[in-house]
Image (cartoon, rainbow, N blue to C red; front, top):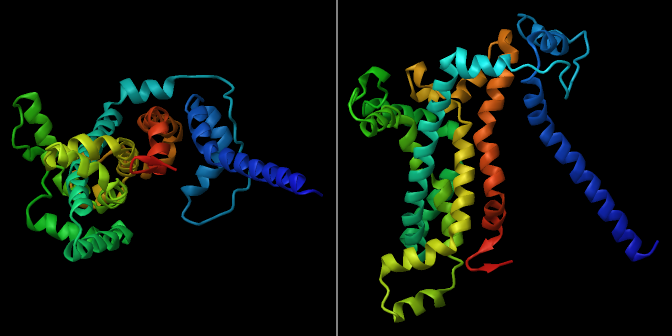
Amino acid sequence: MTLKQKKHTLDVIVTVFIFVAAVMFIMPTVLTIANSFMTSKEISANYGSMFSNMTDDKKTFISENVNLKFIPDKVTFDQYRAVLFKSPDYLMKFWNSVILTVPITLFQLIVAVFASYGFARYPNKVKNIIFFAYIILMLMPYQVTLVPNYLVADKFGMLEAAEKLPFRGAAAFLNVFSMIWTRRAVILPGIFSPFSVFLLTKVMRRIPVSYVEAAKLDGAGEFQILTKIYLPLCKSALVSIGMLVFIDYWNMVEQPLVLMKDAEMHPLSVFLSQINTGDVGLAFAVGAVYMVPTILMFLYGEDYLVEGITYSGGIKG
């Protein structure tokens, strides 16, 4: 076998492996969307044996085969009608997810821009030690810091109930601020997460110094250097980091459960983690609705995500 034939065989093997892996990763999403259009009777016929065993006190093996179907026998929108119109609780939990995730993503990026600019532009021993501490904190799982966060939030009185809104009944903007304020026990630790600072600092450190020197010769100040040089060159990185942060906090479960006493303020991700086995069909519809923002974000920002990962300070590898 020639070298060219070996290379062709290797390419075929790698392609088949990637295809199989892609199918395995996308299958749960396709099944969720397909099953959300099935009737409750059909879902029970396909998965009833599996979920009936989940409700038993004793762990038993599934005696019947689970039927994975990608095409419903009868398409119905009853599940979506129940989620979107008949039961407002699901939409309220959806907006709870938005109220938690959007401020965390937005302000985490703002904090990361200024912190990363300081780390990248003026490195010294003290900042290197602080940056190393950022790396240590990023490597630690969130569950390790969950109890300290709870103690601090409780000490500062941030574990408030929903009825303690400071501006209840006021203008729309103040109402939004009130909803964010009552969720600050979850939002504040998320805003100062080290993940964005670490990644953005690595990107900013790759920006050639010659760009900054040329800007200084033209009389640019620090703010102009940040806004005219660093931010445009880091645009793809900012979008990709924002997408990763949004998806991470969109799926959070432990933080709201521990740091929010009022169950009415819990996001939709908590509901999906505590789904009642008697409402499996409804869970598929809720899951499909829950995936819409992340899927749209990925479809819109796929190019930014790939470019942000491969970007290296004005020079693409």
